[in-house]
Length: 239
Image (tube, rainbow, N blue to C red; front, side, top):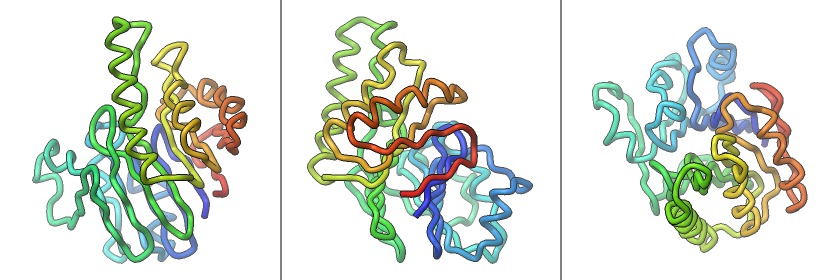
C-alpha cells in the first residue's frame, strides 16, 4: 500500500483494488487526481474526520462520474453541522467515537478528538493506519494561561489513553505538526509516538509551512519511525 500526500491534512491510501481518500479539500473536476481516480476502475472510499472547512468540502460529493463505485464515511458531526441539502441523494455512513464501519476492503473505527469530530483508525490490506483529524495537544502555551494549556494536555492524554487500549502498533500515522502552536508545536506528536510504535510517520495540518513539518524528522526517527519527508502535493510513500 502507498500513501500519497495531497494538501494540509488530505491523503490518499492506494491499493491495487481500492483507494481511500481522507480529509481532502480543494479537489475540482478538472484536477488530475480526480481524473485519475475516476479512470482507475478501483473502488473509492471517501472519509472526512469533521466538518471544518480545511478537512471537509462538500464538493467531494459531486466529483465522481456515475461509473465510479464510491462509499462515503463521515464523522457524525458533519451531519449535524452541514445543511442537509448539501448531501442531496448521496448514501453516506456516519460514525462517532466508539463506532466502526466494516466495508469489503477495510474497517474504519472512530476515536475521539480534542477539537471537533473524530480521528480514524483504519485496517486495510493487512496494514494498520491512523489519521488524527484534529486530534492533537492543542496547548497554545505561549498565548494562554498555564492552567488552560495544562487542561488541553490532560484532554489530549485522555484521548490518547483510549487509543492505546485498542491500538498497540501502527504501520502509518498521519498527525498534526502545526507550527501555529509555537515552540512546542510537535509536543502532541511526540507524546503519541512515545505511546504507540509507528512504522511511517506523515506530518499534516502544517498548512504551507513545509519546513516546520520536515523539522520533525529527527524526533520521529529517534522514536523508530520512518518519516514521510513531504516536499509538495503528490509526494508518495510506501507503507
